[in-house]
Image (cartoon, rainbow, N blue to C red; front, side, top):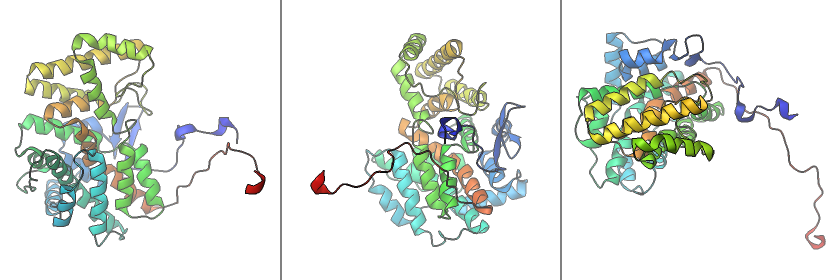
Length: 378
C-alpha cells in the first residue's frame, strides 16, 4: 500500500451512513435531523433537542411532557454508586471519575446486555438523567460538601445547577447553559462518537461504548479543548496582552486550542450562537473580570483570523462562558459529556440497527520477515 492511498487520521474517509447529523455546506450549518443547530439552540429547550436526536422528530407538547417525566423518573443514584463517588480521589480529573461512575452504573444495571432498540433507548435516557448527578456529586465531593439530591420540581438544566451549587441561577444563565448543551449534543463521526461506534460494532454493551467515548473526549484535541481555552485566557492575563500573546504563540508554532476544525473551513456554525451566549454571561455577571475575559477573547480571535485566516471553534466561547457560570475548569469537559450522551447513544443505536464490525486495515512499516536466533547465539 502506497502512502498516497493512506488517509492518516481517516481524514476524508466516509465509513458509514448516518441520519443523526450533518454539516451542510450549502447552508454552512451543522444540522440535527435536518434542523439547523443554531435554530434549535435559540428556539428549543435541551430536552426537546435530546428527544429529537433519539426520536428523529421534534416533540409535541404531550410527547415532551412524557419525555421529561421519564427523565425525571430515572434521576437518582444508588447508595452503592454514591458511596463509590464519595471515595474517589479528590485530585483526580472529573473525566476520570465520571468514566468510572458510568462504568459502575453499567455493572449495576441488570439490563446491560439488552441491546434491543427499546433496551438501548431505556439505557440512553438512564445515562442522560444520571450523568448530571454523577458530575455534581463528584464536584461537591472535591469541595468537601455533601451531595445534593435531584429535585424533580426542576427541569434538566435548573436541576443540574441546583445539584452543583445548591441554588438555581438567573433565567439568563440557565438559557445560556441550555444553549451550550444543545450545541455540544451531536457532531456526526467525531473522535468520541466514532470510538463509541467502534465499540458498539463489536456488539459490546452501550455502557462500554459510552465509557470509550468519555475516554476519547477527555483528550485536549477533542473535548478537553474547552478547558485548554480557559487556561490560555488565564495565561494571557489582560486584554492588552492578547495580540502579542497570539503573535508569539504563532511564531513559536504552539498548538493553540479553540481554533480550527477538521470539518469546518470557513467557520464553525455553532460559534456565533455560543459567542452570543458568552456575551450574555458577561453582561449578566457585569464584573470587571468578566469583561476582561470577553475583551481578551476578542483580541485573540481577531489576531488569529487576521494573521492565519483560522476561525474559532465551539470550545473557544464555551470555555469562558462555563467559567462565568461558576464551574471549575476541570468540569468543562464533563459538561460536554452531559450533552454528548445524547449523540453518542443515538449513534450506538444507529450502529446496532445495521451492524458491521468496524475493522480497518493498516499499512505495515516495520521490519521484514526475520528468523529468531537462540539466546546462546545472540
